[in-house]
Image 1 (cartoon, helix red, strand yellow):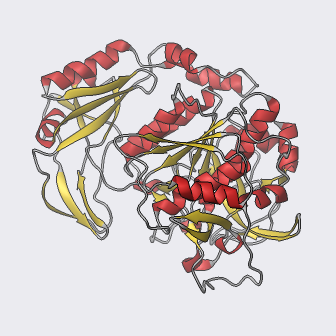
Image 2 (cartoon, rainbow, N blue to C red):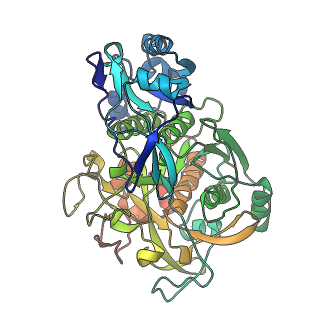
Image 3 (tube, helix red, strand yellow):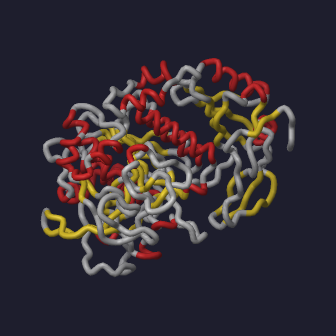
Length: 515
């Protein structure tokens, strides 16, 4: 569909999913919504603000951010004019999120962005997809940075593992499970605060929670008062329990119950979005710029190999996480549950995104053995191919950030993953309640809300949001338990930072001091 009036949108190229094949053109009358992301204003100097914050500069308020770094009205208007010329409707526009949401038919979007849309069949179902780049007209080539929603393939997976009855997929000689509060006790979390005044955002790409399950769970572990939990709909997704505890429901409940048990005074806000790159991005930017709930921490337990993302998605997620840092928001992300390959069967090492983004706190996993209130041993979580293993390695996309300049990556230079770790082995996992029954869950999915709960406690204790904490962690490694035993496949644990458990697991009281 070559057209001299259009420009390819940098980084928008797509290939079919592995194992997928086109079975016909997408229905031209199908209606969809597409998110168009525009540039920051030319006057924006966010990188200078972030550099200043590294020296303990003050974060922006959300109103200050919009005034200094929100999209120009003229750019949003230009997208609106383009929509009207192509029989598309403007559903929403946001200067803070830098987006214009457009609605229309497949036929209209096909013409507007000079792109072919096909129906693809793959082992897990079907999706509406495309190959090659998206195109934009001359008038938008310097304005539009991303277009999301034309392709609705599933983008991410939840990073959780459930203990099955008779599960023996490991060689560990000890097996036990913990309540989230017990894990917090073992990691010496501050005990004189409960997260009051904080809001923890949870990004959920499917499933849901039943209030009765939460009420029963928190009551059974004497978490009183139980935390306030709010569901937010993003891109028409909702809190919709599926009845399958091994799937997205398990992820949602694990996130809420871990974060809520550790910081019951915090407001837990779950942002439900479709499992697409569009839905994922919209959920993150909605949470970041939520003027009502104002989360100070965002916990993400979903992701996928870097190689499965478009360059435009990697860029726009990265910009969103920069914006979170500028607002004093800490973002914790699960590092993945498929070891050093991240589940890619090409014989190479891969890391999970968004954990590999340098503006987030990437959370790896351990196997935790305790006696009473004392940790006896802690090693890298690795139960083999069937049981899972913590993700970790070196990014092929993001350069090694300044705060990691002193670490040895033992290979190619890039952003090292993870930064920190926590109990993740399902065989030493977390007691949870989901879909009316009790289970034990693990996975690095548990570690992201585990750290999110800790940050909420410290935020309350200090009276200020900690925001982007990575530089302080790398400068104060004694505030973490160094894990030196085990491997995640290609990488071995070792003294100091390693590509299995990062700097180690938290010493909560010491972290409260250094932050």
